[in-house]
Length: 248
Image (cartoon, rainbow, N blue to C red; front, side, top):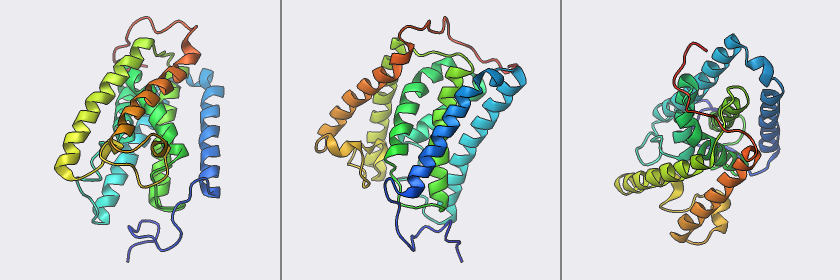
């Protein structure tokens, strides 16, 4: 008999937006962000940097592996819904590689697409399973991990995005959109929500009908990326791209 914490089928109330468990989880994520900032100087020690990067990368990769195994365990794995092609799944994998390789090129993309996408997902989750179901825990661990990975590289490793990073991210997202459209036609899925709106309430509900909300999303993404860039306007950007350096 399948444990209710891992069951595919709900036996009680579904996840509710801004329920007590949702709000408490958001507070915990905010606390982790604050702790990362407050202890940024201590984390700069060489041994701490190496450990932190690999622990964060390990958590991200483990969350994706557990997610895929859960679908296999519940016999719900399908190419239409479980390929790692949603924005946060893609940025999760890129964030893990970024942490391990200390890649500035990946940081440029994950800072904007990762933080922007994960923050929206944390606030308005595409989620049906309430706490303490596995999917609830996995969802918030994965998305919080993306945010923490990007902030770690900013506050501890000293990486900085540039205006050019914004346009690189937009180019990457549009390329990913084309891939998602092709895969959606092939599988019947809705990766990147470019085939229809998500079932749960989200920002997309305010951006018009299909397919015009896709164009609106481009504008929202660009505005959000410039908003994320504001704290760095007066700061000196990273002088050159950092190559892989596993000695730190």
